[in-house]
Image (cartoon, rainbow, N blue to C red; front, side):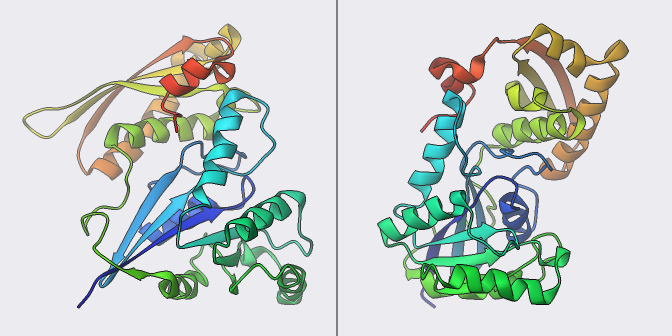
Length: 295
């Protein structure tokens, strides 16, 4: 049987559930999620192989108005990800009007002549009659081959979405081995898991000013993995909050992260974390690149 591949971008404004959808499609956690906007910073590929088709889903940062060099990088990552792919899934919330960010993404999609599917997420939060109004609002844009209501949280409608994606698969060899679920190096996944816990545990702007660098990633003969991670923040006062009273907050973050790292790696992990200050790193081209946010 001849194999096919489909490279499909998952785009949308911040916090609409793109990473939750990517994780559900892949069947394991490869992209971090939180209830805070702009959680995802890099393009992350989630790979789903169902013979004879391999889907490569490109999870992108939320499309927003950039205010920093890091923000510029994230917005450019979205724009570029809508080019040169087989299709785009635009994920939106069940709101019966097309927002300005959605309008901008729809224009981008139309400009590249990229086939598109609309996924109306979070349908478990609204009544069905409200959903019809959302479908009507987006149907008028004329941008979508299909409109599919889903819940990335429960999986409702996701199989229908995947079936729709099959239409865009093109004949050719698989791009990844069939047992691979992401293009992200293991140490990058570990860094993102730690950053997710910062987002979950810390309030307001502090977690958005953090970056995580893995300085050691080694495996012992018995399979145990040792990880050293440095958490960077922008202010000395933030460092104190991240560490917490008698180190309690950092211990909580590290413990939560270690559990997820062990789940992903399938083995015991020893995680050691430090916190350092790098003022205004989000506005430094050098530091943004240094922390892995490069084209």
